Image (cartoon, rainbow, N blue to C red; front, top):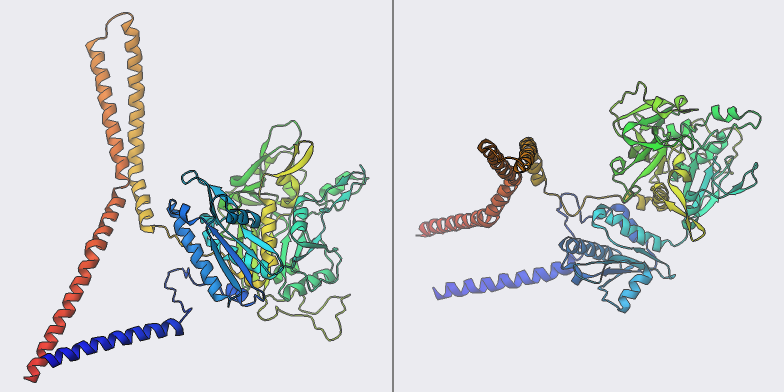
Length: 632
């Protein structure tokens, strides 16, 4: 018996040493390995992220300013702060030493707090904790360039990876992106021939020049420089075949394009005749580069305007008149936005006489709506909007189709040329160069297209304010922001564009929400009935009490009146008690679910493991007994 026990103890020691050895071995051999078992692959970075990290040539320092002590008092921010920190550590571990992460908890009046402000990370006042709460990221590169995420907003959690990798990409590629800007509208500063006054450039163009190297491209351009990162096309009307061919080849080389087209551009001044003012009013103001759009898988009817009662804004047609609702002038809110980095965080976008976009059936291009109308919308002929005197007339015979029309879209993929028969007349290719018939391998084109050009004009999103004698532009809509977001997104590499919104780390309690909706439906009718009864009872009681007060000045209240007043007071008390019970019943199912989950977690799971352990022990004893009996 002693010898058997010794052998058993030696075997246990040997197994323990083997386990420790394997743990040390795997810790070194499998360092950096991850197994992501989350439903939405929350801990798996996008392929574009991995390629951007691999392309970093010079070290980048990341400074994660996070007030960890303050976050202890803010549970939601504490959870998200842990998520952000783990994600940054993951990126640093994958970057082969090119990302150096510094985690800093800035203390009040410290050098770290000054450093955060210097790098562009904003502190937020927190009344509960006192002082400033820092929760942002800054980065610096070897050329003293820096970029920052002012604050990580938990409501934008799905864009965490995009925001961080965009910052890394900007620091790894510090050169200002080049934007070629082709517009047939008078967007740039110019001199009015009649008044002689200088008109300022449209605000959206001025803002783009602050962030990008903007090069004007003439409508008759025959080539697009190879160093152009983004091509902007505003109202591409009546472009020559030569210019369209240059755009086509740019797209097939993997070009990124931001396009604004329109069925009726209010800012189109072409066709004007000083001798005949009506000529400009009836001239064609649509832009429809049909061949290019068809090659890119986009359908657009330049003769139709989206009229939307659900998104209509009130406008003043003539000075001195009352504003009237115009179903062709749309105010889009977040319910019209898709879940995309271009529209993330925006409040409202205004459009005027916008058209509708749709994917062409059978196209291999990926078509994703960015902005959509409400379902209370209909396509109307653009002719009805010309010389319009009364916007209310647009509602005559209005029949909503129930369709949400796409007003802006993101299109991507491997495209075919719009010139399958070869270059048009007038195009001379360099010696040895052939025209492309389809997109280059692994270089898909990226297009963001808006079916409106008027959204770019100042009057739809900017108003000028007098500030101590200075005219200051104040944005009252997000039109400028959506353009800058689109430019910033397209100005990055294809890898950066591929990094899109992801599922959130904090998942909703779907079962709880389902129970809550069912409870609301079940109890809401009863609640409304009781509230109506309570309202009627209070009105009757108030009336009787008023009579009571008048009666006190003259004669005594009769016993019948006293009994009636008492009856209504009791009825009021009963209804209020029943109403409280109904409202408490709204959460009854949720509380019941919570109780069941507690029982399962506290009792059920341990009991299951206990039964499993007992079953295994019983099986082992029986097996041992069987073996022993066989030996005997």
